[in-house]
Image (cartoon, rainbow, N blue to C red; front, side, top):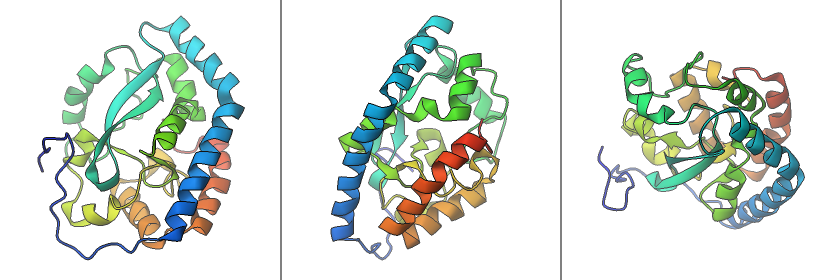
Length: 221
């Protein structure tokens, strides 16, 4: 699959359109905006302290901006707190090559992660800047996680139309069902389960389960 002139993957699969929620989509967007603003205000002291800690303990900026694949395979710039050594992305290709056949690139003992970064990942504090992506309309509070460009190149084409018919989320079904300990096949199945059964009620259940998943740190890396 190739990138088009806009920097997005070309959506070329022919398949029945995924039903839209209509009014539910608009309500979901209102919830996203209100929820993102509320969470930003409530977590601002934590986010500010974490950014300062990152800057004081390792070289490089506190924020990390990375291209990700989102709704309708469009590429956008996702925000995170930096959890790795500065310039870690230059080592990614070599590390990914050591794990052939794996779609989702994530190492359990990634040597590039800093000591502070490991704690930020375990608590999911590193994901808080993505509330800005939600406010921009690039993400939702709930949905499949946005993919790395390298992950997208290996993602099964037969399910792309369904999987990328919704916005990526800050949290999602597989984030509250085991996180990184799940296999590629289990992650794909849970993402498609969310897409096929998505509703405001399902979003509410996922949001309610997210704090417990974060506190338990199950499957976090």
